[in-house]
Image (tube, rainbow, N blue to C red):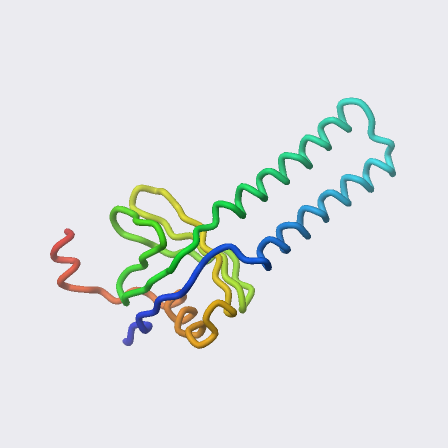
Length: 148
């Protein structure tokens, strides 16, 4: 069984991600607006709807700003992200749009780091990255013996 090749890939916030979050938020805003007009929301329901709308905008901005920037590196055995983690690192694909990936890099401490990967960041390495993302790590006897 062969391991996926080592690869280093640039990650960070992108215009596409910002636009996608904006479109999703606008869809929710339109749905609330339509419900408001159709049912004549008033009083506490209107306040609740506006609060949910503002909270969702704040969460979308917080998420977008929290997407890490730097380089993601696969050495054939472990993932190394833009920010250091203690212990082992696991990569989880949360959204795969073929040319865009939203992944979560988790450390042994339970802390996670969101990474947005785009084919346009480095088209020549995109297929190598996708192979590494979906391939299981090969055991490393020397590393496994050092970290029981």
